[in-house]
Each structure stands twice: as structure tokens, then as C-alpha cells.
Length: 409
Image (cartoon, rainbow, N blue to C red; front, side, top):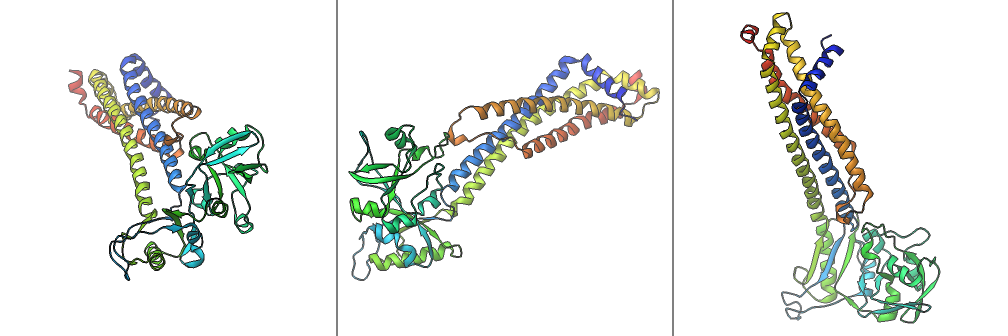
């Protein structure tokens, strides 16, 4: 058997005799492997965090906002504007068969005084419908809940607090079921938003949510500049937009074909573009790491050619006493693969240590959590094997073709 234990020991002995040369080659491969794995892990974490943030806004939802008419219509002059009313928007699913749900969410125009016993806090409050939870996918702490349809029907005065508001008013106290005052009107706390310490709901920690009916009772049926709407699953974007333009055109007196009179934006149109951008960014990081690894492989190939030059006499002597071209080729190829394997193993171990370290510290929320997946490991091992074969093949083939007569003279 060609690749015997003695054969491998001979290769390791040769590497030990040239420690500096072998160490430099191993370092190049280790650094390249480290770069590939860490960059892919960072890219994967960034991709998952960015994708999650996008998905938090329903990917099939549409933004609708008021505009100004660009043409006259049925006696109404060009340039007229209008206002969406809260009551009109929340009744939209009943008025149009194309609408699955609406999720308007807007701050009160004036700051509300929120108090519990002697503690007070001033903050603009948000009015919402039950569908708001579906469109933003915020999380509620265990034991609590969000505003639901029963609350709307019963006109219950209930509130959901952000974690910051809860801490200011209650500290560490269990608040579910307790009553707060909003502009001297009592509201029962039914839920607390979860703060995951990484920015997932950090921007919601200062918010207070009440139902739209409670809001109207406090501030009146105010106008809103925009709202979020979800079409029914079988309804396409174009049909959905046409139905909204036709409905609001009749209601607010503008031409349904007037694009300036009402703004419409389908999130799904850019959802895939953003997804492909994130995937492309991952591929770019992978290519950067692989290029670093490729530079290391060039160093290995150069070292292998140097080995052949230094051992030309030895190779010629081995051929003279009976070694075949295949034996010479396999020995040098295996030597290159061992260098690649040792360097790759060191690089993988170092990258794993760094990734675990990064996971244990608080990184910027937009960066996400670095993740080492089996796909990353598999890609790295495949690239290492490929580079090892390429870096060792040509020097080994050159060695196998050495003429023993010329080598010994």
C-alpha cells in the first residue's frame, strides 16, 4: 500500500526539517480559512437579522397614503386634498371584499399624561386595531396579550405598555391587571412588549397602545396621513390597488386613475430585491474569504515547487532504485494536502473560538448574531480540498516527470 504509515511519517519528517517553510504555508491557509468562516458567519447573522426585520412588516402588506389630485373631477378642482378618517379606515375590510385587514397606527396629536399612583409619564400614545399585531409581529411578554376584537366590541379601556414605560411607572412590579390613568381616564394594563436586548423591540419600549375606539373617545375621530392594508391571499397587487383607488375615489371625490391623488406602495415589490441583495452580500463576503484562501494556496504551491527543486537529486535517486512516477506524485500531493489540512483545521478552530466570543458579547443590533452553520463548514472543507488538490497537483506532476538521469548528474 502506497500511502503506508511509514510513507506519511516520511512526509511529516520532511515538513519538520523545514519548519519555517511549512509553518508559513500552514499560517497562510489557517488565516484564509479563518477569514472564510468568520466572514460567512457574520454574513449569515446579518442576513438573518435583516431578513427578520423586513419580515416584521408583513411582506404582502401595502402602504396607502393621501395625496393631492392632479386633475379636476366631477366639478372638484385640481389640487384638492382630503383626509383619511380613523372610522373609515377600520371599516375598510367590511366595505371591500379585496381587503383582508387594515392596521392603522398613529400617535395622538398631543402628549398624554400617563400615571400610576404618584408616578407620571408624558408620552404620545398610539391607537391600534387588533391587526396591528399581525403586521408588525411584535412580541408580548408571557401572561399578557394584545388588544383584540372583543376589546373593540366591548369598548374596553385596555392598554399595552412598552417595557420602558412599564419600568418607569411600576419598576419590577407585576403590572398585568393593574390600572393606569391616561389623561385621567382609567385603563387596565393587559400586556407588556418584550425587549430582547438586541433592538428587536427596543424602539417600541417607549410606546403605549390603546384601541382605536378608546382613542376616538379621548381625541375624536381624527384624520390620519397613511395606513397599512393587507389584501386577501387570492388578490393580486394590481387588483388590490385598483379596488382601493376606486373606493377612495368615490368617497373623497378624485379620479381613480389619478396616481397623485392617492399613494400606494406594495412592500412585496421590493421584498425580493432586498432578499437578493442580502444573499449577494453573503456571496461577496464568501468570495473575499475564498480569495484570501486562494492567496494562501499560491504560497503552498510555491513552497511545493521549492521542495521539488531542493529534492531533485532525492527524487532522481528514488526513481533510479525503483520508485514509480505514481509514488512520487502521490507523496508530494499528500504533502500538500497535509499542509492544507493542518492549516484548515487550525483556521476552523480559531474561527469557532472567535464566533463563540462574538456570540457572548453585545453587538450592534443591525449586525445580528454570527452563526456557524454546517453549510459554512461544508463549503470551507470543500474549498480547502479543492485548493489542496490544485496546489499540490502541478508541483507533484512536475516531480513525477523528472528524468532520474538528469537529476543525478
